[in-house]
Length: 53
Image 1: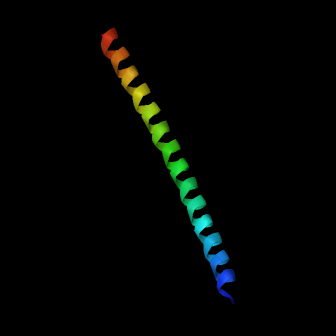
Image 2 (image 1 turned 60 degrees about the vertical axis):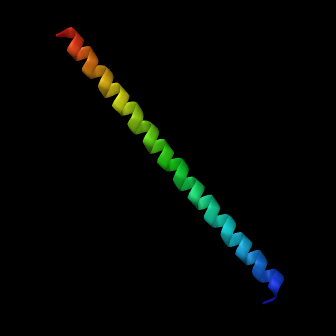
Image 3 (image 1 turned 180 degrees about the horizontal axis):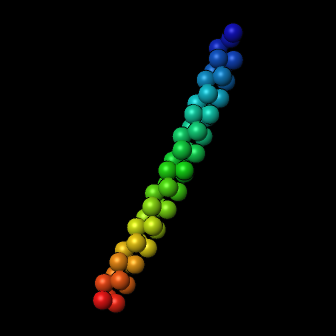
């Protein structure tokens, strides 16, 4: 293999790794956002319940 070929293969591998890590980050942010929404709803229900007593 020549140097330009190895460079292209290395660049392609780097791009694939970056794209895979971005997908994991986006999924993680989605889970964190969903958890924050659930926690906010639970807090709202707790306040509503406390106010009605």
